[in-house]
Length: 387
Length: 113
Image (tube, each protein chain N blue to C red):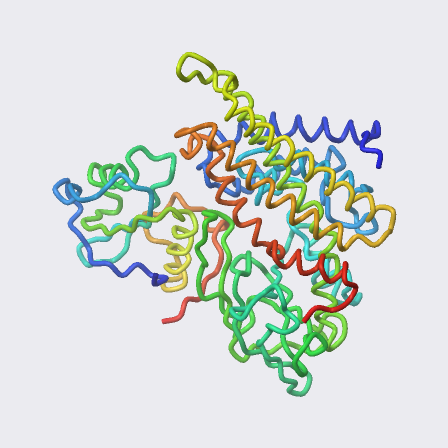
C-alpha cells in the first residue's frame, strides 16, 4: 500500500491545515470551551472560505454538487479538520458542510425535490431516527416503534432515543416496524417535525456538554404513504447503506484528535521540568510517548487500508469495522496518556484535552460500540451470520 | 432530573451566596411573583462560576429580579438549552431579560406536562 500523498492531496492537506490554524483555533479563544457552534453570520463567513477551497459539502456525491474526492482524501481532510478543541463532534464548526443523511440520496424524484435538495443547500436540517430505548446496535431486532397503515397514511407510535438534532430539524428519517420481527419488518419514513404527534420530549445529557441527543415520542403521528423512503420493509437496508463508508472518516476524526494530543504531549514533555530535568528525560514519560506513537501509526495504517479498498471498489466492511475499533480505542488511550503527561493542566478546561477525553470516550460507543465492531469482524471471518 | 427546574426560590442577596459554590451550571432569576425573568449559565469562561454570575445579578438585577435558584451541572450547555427551550414551549417566548440569546440557535422542545 502506497501511503505517499499525491500533489493534489498535499495541496488539500496544507490548505485545510492552514484554515484550521488561522481561522478555527483563534476563534476558539473567544468561545466557551464546550462550544459546538458559532453564530450564523460567522459560520457563513467560514463556509464562503471552504467554498472557495472547493471543499464544501464533503459528504455530498459529486453528482449532487459535492467535491470530487476519494475516501482516502476525505480521511486526510477529516484528520486535519478535527485538530481543534471542538473538532471531534463539530469539525471546523461544520464549515465544510454538516452531516448529511446519505439515505436521502435513495429517495424518489419527488422526495428529493421536497427533502433532499433543501437539505443540500443548507435551507433545511434533517435528523436520523433509528435508535430506541430497546437498543440501537441491532435495529433489525430492537425497533419497537410501530407503523400501522390507515388508508393513504401510516400511523406511528413509539419512542426514539439518542437522536441528535431532532429539536432543530425540519424533518428526518424515522424507522418503524411495519411487519413482523426481524430486519424485513422495518420501514424508513420521512417525517416532518411540525406534524402533530411528533414530540421532542427532552434533551439527553451526556459526557458531551455540547451537541446533545434527544428523546422523541411519537403519538399517533400520521405519515403519508408517499413518504416511505425506499420500499416497505426495506428500512434496514437503507439504515445500513453507507454506514461502512461513513465509519472510515469517522475513524479519521478520532485519529486527528490523537495526533494533536500527542503533539501537545511531546511539546509539553520537553518544556516541563520536574526534579531538575524535563519530563522528556524520564523513561516513564518516554514510554508513554512511544505507546502514543505506535497507537497512532497502527490506527492510521488501518484507516487508510479501509479507505484505499473502498476507493478500489473492493469489499471493505471488515476493514471499516477494524479501523473504527482501533482508531477509537487507540485514540482514547493516546488522549488519556497525553492528559497524564500534562498533570493537573491536562484535566483543566484551559486545555482541550479534558474535552477530547470525554468526547473520545463516547466515540468508543457511538457509530457501533467496539464490541459490535468485533461482532461484525468475527461474522466476516467466520463468513456466517452470528446469532 | 426533571426538564423544568423545580427547586424553591432563594432571595437574590449577598447573604444567600454563602452556601453557593463557584461551580459551573445553570440558574434562573425570578421577580417577586416567582415569574422567571432570566435563565443563565455559568460556563467555563466565567470567573467564580454560579457564585460569580449571581453576584453580578445582585449588583445589577435583570428585569428587577429578586429571587434565584440554581443547579450545579457540568453539562451546562445542554442543560441551559433545555431550560430555554422548555420555557419557550410553555410561554411562547424567551424570559424577558434573555436578550443575550439568539432564538435562531434554539431548538423546539415539547416536554410533557
